[in-house]
Image (tube, rainbow, N blue to C red):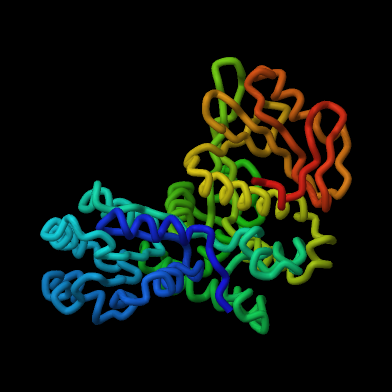
Length: 387
C-alpha cells in the first residue's frame, strides 16, 4: 500500500526547474521510495553498498560514467568527494533539469556539501515521518492515540501486520550500528543508547546539557556532540524561544523534542494506547505529537523558521508561530478533551505581553473531536484542524 506524501507536488516541480533535487530526512521516512515512485525512469544506485560508496568517493569521475543522469543516488552522504564532480556534470548541461536526485540521512554533512558544491543548482527538501493528516488521508479510521503510539514511519502503515515493537527495536539497532558509527567515533554504543533514552525522557522540556550529561555519566562536551548527531540524523528537533524587545527575562535555551512519537513511545516503553493513557509522560508525548503536526503545517505553508516557544521565569506557551507581517499565533498542547478557560491563562498573558494587535489567533490543541470557542477569544482545537 502506497501512502501519498504531501511533499510530492513540490518534488515534481523541483525536478522540472532545478538540475539537482536533494531529499533529506531520518532513515525509513520514505525518501527513496518516494523518489522511485515519482521518477521511475531514473536509474538508481545506492551508496549503502560499500563498493559503490568507495568508487563514488575515490573515483567519482568513473562512478558518474557508470551512472550517468538522469539518476537517483541514494545515501549520497557516504561519498562527500562526489559533490564537486556532480557540480561539473551539472554545469556541462545546465539547462537539463532533474538530472540528479539525491537522498541522504545525515542532514548536516549533506547540507554542508550541497552548499559548498551545488549552491544555486539544488533544491533541498526535508521529509519527516508521516503527519497525522497524511495517515488519515490513506487510512481514515486511524485513531489519534493509535497514531501516536505507532508513530509515523510509512512502513508501519503500508504493512499493518508489522509488529511496532519489533520495528523500533530493529530501527534502534540499525541506527546505532550504521548512522552513529559513521557519524563519529562513539566509544560505547551502550552509553549512546542510554543518552538517546535520556533525551526521550526530556522530550518537550527545556534542554539542559549539563543535567543530561550528568545523568548519563558523560562529559558535557560529549553530550553536546551527541545532540548534534541526533539532530543531524533527524532523530531530535530543537525548538528555539521567541522573544522581542517588549518581553523580559526570556530563556535562551531551546526545547528538546523527539522527532517521531512512535520512537519516543518505544524509548519510554509505552507499547499500547492504554499504556499511553496511564503514562506519567502522556502530556509530554502529546506536546511532541502536536509539535510534529505544526512543523508539517509550517513546512508545507512555506514558512521555514516560523515556529518557536515562549517562556519567562514563571510562564510558558508551548508554540508561537510567526505568520509574517509581525503577526503571531499562539498554541498550547493539552492532553484533554474538554479544555476550559483556565487552560488559556498563559495564552492570555503572552497575548497581553506582546500586544493584542499582533495576535493572529490562539488555541488549545487538544483531543476534542470538534473545535469550539472558549470564553476569552481563544479556541479549543483538534489536531485535524491545524491547517
